[in-house]
Length: 323
Ligand code: CP
Image 1 (cartoon, rainbow, N blue to C red):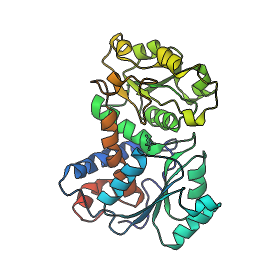
Image 2: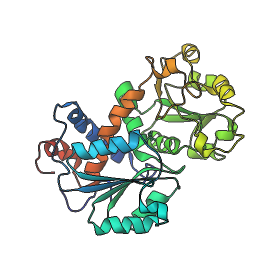
Image 3: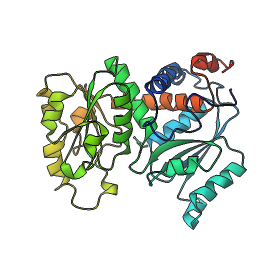
Image 4: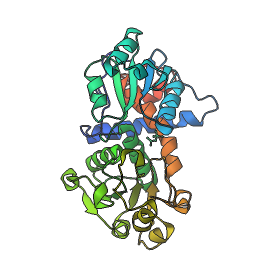
């Protein structure tokens, strides 16, 4: 593999600064890697000599496990560290933790952290590649990428589509990564939710703002429904969960009233019966489990490209050839 990672640079902290060419290349590379997960023996030697640390300071199911599957399926050596049970609980700083990991000769760190900016902070201080697995309210770039891949798979394109992100925009790193990626690839983007859960400068991000979910559904080709992040809220953002569902919940009745046959995404974990009804989550509009499947392929692509893999050699790399 090339000693000078060039295509994506050293780190993936967010989608904000990626070009359309870079985004498309990650998605195309993920398409190459998808079939590995369909094989009986789900393992190729692409990252055979790499050691990767998954450092999670916040809870995660999908992101942590799909990174781990992606790493193992590409033959990397992986170690998982969660805050509980590590010396982080004794007050060790992030940088000291990372420097100690570096001293054990690692190559990459995948990190989820509750503070916006934590991924960039770490990337600026260690030579290993850093991949942001979600930092505070800032970005969740691999979630944004897997959402883009799922939309492109289902709709055949991203350019010109109308995509509305519905729900708790204020606390959402997923919303930000989606907005940057979708706008760069030529989609029209809107956000919809209660004014209390809307960032004050939402329109400065280049998106439309809807406060009525019926209007958003009328406008959109794709809905990306976000979880109410109850753990990041103090009281008072919404009157009650029942009220939220009544006013902003995505239900079959609301989808049936729309002119178009909408596609519905949700990054998970879902609050069923709050932001999305079960019959939508499990029904024909939903691509929620496709998102999860695509998450492994997207993370394989990001790991491969940050490790210096050449996009045009992804197919050969899977066979154990030159990258
Ligand atoms: N979508 C997502 O980030 O899910 P997890 O919190 O389970 O990783």
